[in-house]
Length: 107
Image (cartoon, rainbow, N blue to C red; front, side):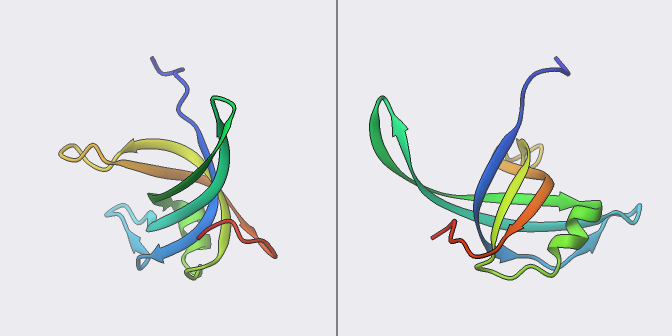
């Protein structure tokens, strides 16, 4: 089942950034939250969508995000995984991040 699709791209605003930390092996890790608001079509009808999602970045992506401030617009792509073995809350594991200037992608 290694080839099963699990990809998510989300544009939005950073709403919270935790301090940069490192794993015992020295890999940078950054936890943050993204807020997204848009209008989507569902069954042919417009629907207002708002969501906040926990996210985590590792390595170079984590160090890039370490300087991010709440309110900054981003496009994040990665995969969804459970927060932990005890919590099945979804967390976006970000592989790529793009800072978007001059737009408002969030709340």
